[in-house]
Image (cartoon, rainbow, N blue to C red; front, top):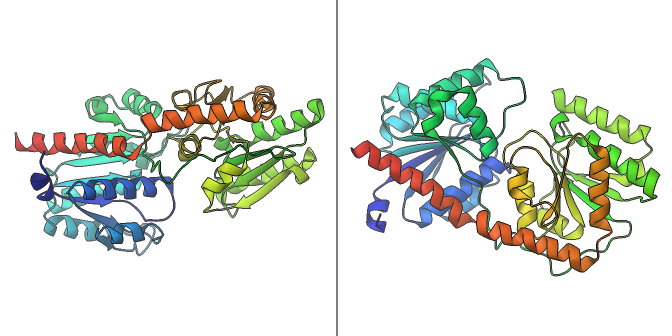
Amino acid sequence: MSNAIRTNHKFLFIIDNLSTGGSQRQMVNLAIGLKKRGYQIELFCYAPGDLLAKPLYEQQIPVHWHIKKGRYSPDVIFDLSRLIKNGGYDLFLSFLTTPNFYTILAALLSGKWKTPLIVSERSYDYPGWVSRKELLIRHLYRFSSFVVTNSHHQRERLAKSYPFLINRLRTIYNGYDLHYFYPAEKEPENNPPRLLVIASVSHFKNSSCLIRAVKILRDRHHIFLHVDWVGQREVSGHRLEALKQMEKEIQDYGLEEQWHWLGQRTDIIQQLHQHEVLVHPSYVEGLPNVVCEALACGRPVIVSNALDHPNLVQDGVSGFLFDWRSPEQLAEKILRIIEMPAAERHKMGSNGRAFAEKHLGLDRYVDEFEDLIRFSLNKKKR
C-alpha cells in the first residue's frame, strides 16, 4: 500500500481516557506509529485523564473529548454516534471492553455498522466469572472485523467460550519503544538485595506467595532482602480487601522493615536499573507490560508459570518461572538470582533484551495491526 493511498484513509480510535495505563500507552503508540506511516488518525475519549495526550498533539493527532456525565449515562454513545456519522472515517479501532461496547452501539446507531471495526481486549477474564455485561459485549463482537487480544491465553479462552468468534480472533503482543526502554550499563549490587514489584493491589497479583517467599528466605537462609512495591495504594472494594490481607501478613511475619511501598512512580526505567530482579507472581492478566518493559531494560524477571509468561521468559535464560502456588519454589528462584555473580545476572538480562528486540518492538506491533487494517479495508471493497 503506497503512502498516497494511506493518506486517504482516516481512522477513529476509541478508548476511555489517556491516563498512564498500559492500554492507553499501547493505543498512543499505535496511533503515532500509523500516523508516521501516512494514515489520518483521530481519537475519541470519554473519561478524564490526559497525561498521554501531549505526544498525540505533537504528531497533530486530534483528540475528541466528550466527558461522560455519569456512570450509567448513555450520552457518550450518542456523542460518539454523531462523530462516527459525520466524521468520514474508513475504520474504527477500540481498546478495552467498555469502549468496545460503546463503539459497536454507536456504529449501529449511526448506520455505519458496515464500516470496518477492530476491537481489542487487553486483559484476561477472571477465573470462573464473567459478568452479564461482558457476555453481551462478546456477542456484539459479531459486528467486528477482528477481535484482538494481547495474549494467546485470552484468545484461546475466548475461542473456547465463544466459538462463533474463532475466525475473527487474533493475538498481537504489545509494542515498546526500545530506545526509551534501555539496559543499564552495569548490574546493581545492593546489600541487602532488592526485589522490585510493579503491580496494582489485587488477590490475583498473588502477593501472598511473595510475602511467604520473603519469610522463607529470612527464616531458612538468613537473607533479609528488601521488597520495593511500585503501584497505587489508595484502593477500594476487592483491592482494599487484598491490601488489608497483604498488610496483615507482612505484620504477622514481622517483615515491615523489609517491605517498602513506593506508590505510583514515573521513573520505572530507573527503578528497573536499581534492582537485582523484577518479581511478578500474578496469575490473572493479559500481557504484563511491566514484564515486557523489564526485558527491554535488560533486567532478569521471575514470573509465575501461568498465562503467556512462559512465552515471554525463558526459564534459566532470561529469568525464572515458578509455580504460582509455591512460595518455596519462588524463594528458591529468588535465591538463585541474588547469589549469581553480577556478570552472570547481566548475561541473563542481555538475553531478555535480545528477546525484546526480536518480539516486542514498536515496528512489529504497528506492522501486525496494519496488516489487519489493510485486510479489513480490502475486504470491504470486495
